[in-house]
Length: 107
Image (cartoon, rainbow, N blue to C red; front, side, top):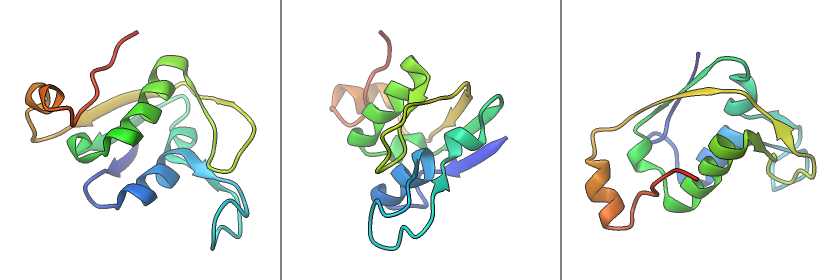
């Protein structure tokens, strides 16, 4: 099981933690980094405090959940992943969706 607490990191770091990045994709990206989704391939990814994730990242997260694929930051290659997600939050997600702060999933 791979774990990520979404409340512990700023939005810019959550994206690189989840999806990884390619060398040279931004300042200080000296090496390729594998993201949590790739690390959890074939297993489980626990996203704690998912209600803290910014809406822009929720859209990218939905793509991975629906299409089972991602691209690392700065990458050009689509990476297939098979990951079970467990998510937790202390927020009322129905209220957050009604107020436009949390994206409803589904196809």
